[in-house]
Image (tube, rainbow, N blue to C red; front, side, top):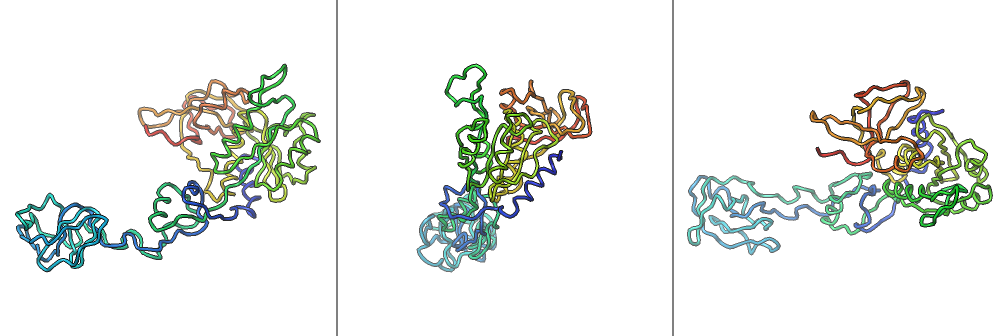
Length: 406
């Protein structure tokens, strides 16, 4: 069996010829979370003019070399309007935040340091050239690269792109991912299950995980545990970027997914990984489609998705890594495990008084228990080579949500 790290590395290496996917131009509102496919280059100076950063008075610094200078106020400049003209020698002008610095002015003094006396302004301290002035192009100069290709579009990127006149961005295409639940025992959500039946829940859970990874899910009808049904369902994944199946990849008589994939022409690379939960995991390629065979147990399906499918989909989308934060924490309870397996323990996190992180395992780690797949915010990584970890043992944790602020 492969270790989880080797399995993940083999998956990413196998996708190197198709990742990242082709680029497409989309409106700014549709670009959030996508990877830039070209550098974002400014086509104008930002700001486009010398601007005041304060409400106050614009002047030549040489006209107020010391405290007590008295200058006539020539005119006012408001944000959003051009200056009415050049600043007369020996004069100042009223100016507001964002206002255009008139020609001739090289400084602004905040209004708290100035006293009005009729049509004149009395300056309480010496002026300094450049004070409270935001020079033209000081943020971005025309032709300057604002963000490199590969940068992930966040809300600030969208605002920046709008400010330099962009209405669209060239970004990497989101992967389209077929999700195929399998099993004779499964009935659709909303239907009351009969004896021996279960409501199919993996499909919707995996579709949500696909969306969270930055891809687009295509949920296929559940396939039965027979070759004909599997072949018909697999046809719905043709031409998509990835296929994720759940169930039917173990070694039972009714575990037919691997055989169905091979019959359809998929080249399977491996089908077991030394981890818990999720040891029966399959990966391969079907032409240009990445194929992931996940276990049918709900927690096993989501954990293997997190470890292997999520980073693969992000690579296809041009996004870096798996997008998760890894931290160290201490277990709140002793754990026993098979020494040959890496175990991923579903946990709640909480901060200790000293700022450290505690990892509290869920009440149940049984992969078939639906409650073990919901409500946790971290996976504690119990490494191979150890059979017992005591309470307080320090381990790495993969945070599934942003870190707690406190």
